[in-house]
Every structure is written in C-alpha cells, then in structure tokens.
Image (cartoon, rainbow, N blue to C red; front, side, top):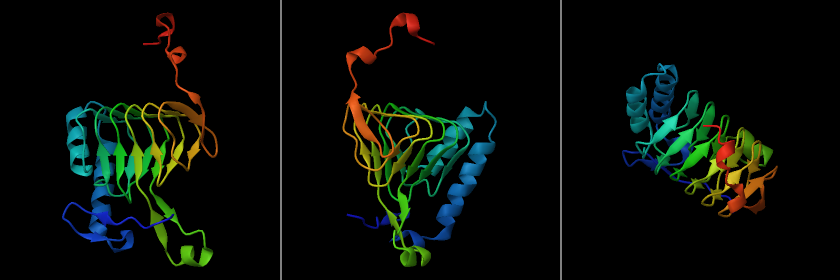
Length: 197
C-alpha cells in the first residue's frame, strides 16, 4: 500500500515533503556542494560535513564525490559504509544503511516517487517510503533501490538492477525488476591466489 511518509526535521517540525521549510533542502545542497568540491586529502573536513549533513553518521562512513541527497537528516549510517562515485540518495523518508554496506558507483536510493495518475502527478502529488539496507549489503553499479524496500543482511544486488520489492537476507539478486537468483554460499569466497588487493 502506497503512503506518504511524514518527514521530521532535526528541529521537530513535521509535515509533508512539500510543506517542509525550503531552507532544509538548501542546507543539504550547500553541504553536498562543499563536500563535492573538497580536495581529496581533506578527509577530516569531509567527515565534519557528513556529520552535519546526516541524521546519524558513523565515523566509518566514506563517500567518494560526487554525492547528492535531498535533505540529509533522513540518512543514517550504522557502521562501515563505503559509498562510491556518483551516488544519489533521495531521502524524503528515512534511509538506514547498515554496517558493512558497499554501494558501487552510480547507485540511487530513491524514497521519493510520484503518482501514477497523470492528473495527480501534474498537480505535484508525490509519495515517499523508507529504505533499509541491513548489515553487509553490497549494491552493484548503477542499481536503483525504490522506496519501501528492505534489503536483507548479507545480500548482493547485481549491477543495473531495479529493486522494487524486499530482498531476503543472504542472497544474490539481480534484474529488472530485481529478484533473488541464488543464496550466498561458502563457494563465493575468493581463494587467496585470486585476491586483487
């Protein structure tokens, strides 16, 4: 069932996305711009920006520029999070990123959506649903995760997938729409002689 998630900003203001004070989005845009312009050796400053931008920012959160988000305060990292180049998080609802998460280049986590009905869509009616990545999730390059989705612990999402429904724990899933293909097994361990680094 579709629903409009109520947003809550750090000051306690509540309301639908279109009713939120515009300065909240402006702050995120400014911080993302600053983050993306920072020099490669400015690790300390980048961490400061992420702590100011995110609702919860674990110290082991690493993001390669360019990075974009809508609000920032709805994004929560709960452990090691490695987010590669050109990722986008449309955090109109809460986004929880579990420990050990790896997001490859070009990944999009999109809580936001629009009405299927064209008249409603033209009038600006939108939807928003939360996204949860449980621990040790790896999302391949250019994959899209839609609002309302939970990806279970230890699962891998193949490159280019579009995830529209929950994915259980411990599977390799891929496709458009994304579906579980097989479980992750001991045979997936890379032997020592094949380690790249």
